[in-house]
Image (spheres, rainbow, N blue to C red):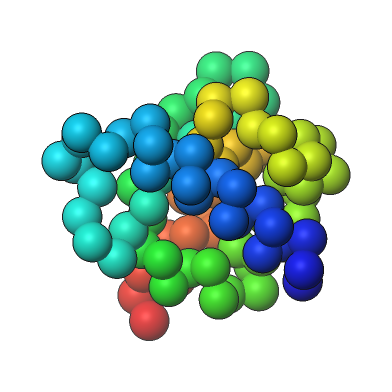
Length: 93
């Protein structure tokens, strides 16, 4: 759990710096990059961070990238389809 918090703190601070002038990320949401080679940007609610399925994705990100993410933001190393399959039900709660 501490590793997840470390990744999030570092990634979210990088994301804040990189998108501070952007207006497409509303309060209560954050951007993640999804994909193995080609990265797609998704803006998702911060509430997802509490869900066990999303935390599994964060653990995968930690295993693959450690705390240094190549995009400067939080990168999830799975296919876009899998990411949508996992996060779609989370939005219905």
